[in-house]
Image (cartoon, rainbow, N blue to C red):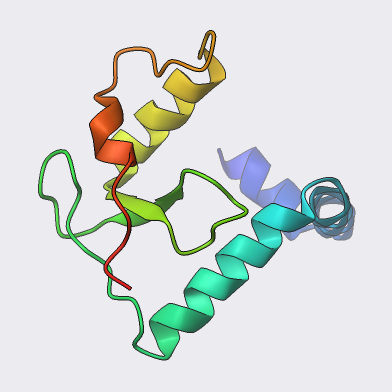
Length: 110
């Protein structure tokens, strides 16, 4: 881990990080827009973070179910957010593997 931090702090590591970020912006502009729009709405007070939908943890993150609808999010703690992304990578035929799909159909509090 110390070696990773040292690389990230080096000029080569910083350049690689900038290049990776630039590639992600070009590859997925809708994700960048959705995150920025949600962040702006939260800063303006239009949207307030909620506890994790699954366990109630007050430290939650916004999970976008559709990046084209940036304010339709499900609030999940870090653990459940990571698990949801793992399920989505393993998704077959549009079904959420092992998740209660009704959790992800509600509209936000905005």
